[in-house]
Length: 185
Image (cartoon, rainbow, N blue to C red; front, side):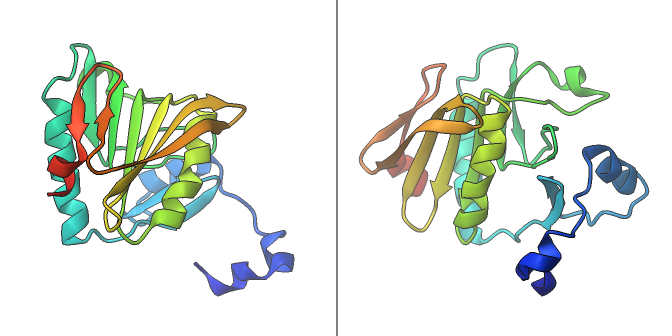
């Protein structure tokens, strides 16, 4: 983060970027390609470690296997929320790819972030997803071989958070069971 923003007196004077302003700058090519808008702040995305990539590919395959008709599994694609446009590692949204020809989805059924070195940032994103009414958010903690399952959004926060570890199983709303042993093997 920019060091000057560590000073509270400066941070109070910083002007957040609106979603519309972010889109204008993006369309002009003035926003870094590997960035996302989080609560009015352009945040540079982390590079992906081999562990992050491995988990993302495994989880994508497991989630996609039984995905119901009328839904799509998106990888690192934007969700347009109120004052943010995060690009979660994985998201399941209702609709086809053609549904989103002119706009990004503004909600999802499930959002997944994979954290190898970015757990604090990804935990902060939970409030963005809860405020958007996204029913479930999984934070995959790669090094810990665990998953934080956030569910039941109420007033912009998830009211239920539980930690799942091996040999437990994650279950999607559409019934797919994911054994953590297969994910972290």
